[in-house]
Amino acid sequence: MLIGVLALQGAFREHEKSLSYCGKDIITRQIRLPQQLEGLDALVIPGGESTTMGKLMNTYNFFEAITDKAEKGLPIFGTCAGLIMMAKGIRGSEQPRLGLMDIVVERNAFGRQVESFEADISIEALGKEQFRAVFIRAPYILETSPQVEVLAKYQEKIILAKQGKFLAAAFHPELTSDIRLHRYFIEKCVG
Ligand code: GLN
Image 1 (cartoon, rainbow, N blue to C red):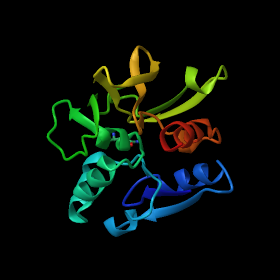
Image 2: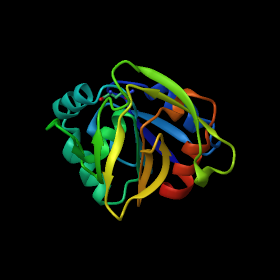
Image 3: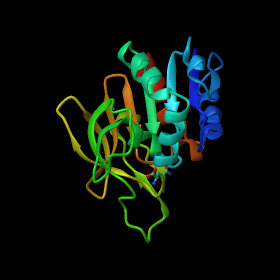
């Protein structure tokens, strides 16, 4: 299985590492040009800075290329800034986004003072064991349509959601050694 990780900016190497631990049959590819999307079974959009990522995606003509593949069924997992890119709505911002999921998000939503923090969260879909979630200037999801499955909340805020083949997390699952969420994406979205 070939999984691309958008490598314009942000935490892409860590995602490659987590993905590679998910199985011997998993090969990762760093995606820097739209042509490299050819042949992928799935795509990961990492965390970083969503406005910068949006500018770079514009420069390299990624918007049309990714939405086109998504419409044809490419599974996509967005984390943190990647979640922001997946959203149809970003509160108070017109910044470029892919708009693949029926969610409205709020950027830097856990407060300016709290740049980053870690928390043990419950993700029922992953089993009983808590998941150590790393939040870095994290967004959260304000609104979802009925098509969106809410998979986890923290402090009443939605931080993990799935819509068909699309998965979005407000935290950074690639920054710990727990690969359950990457595995979940492979099993439930790529399958
Ligand atoms: N705050 C960043 C943004 O709005 C996201 C942070 C992250 O990806 N760690 O793009």
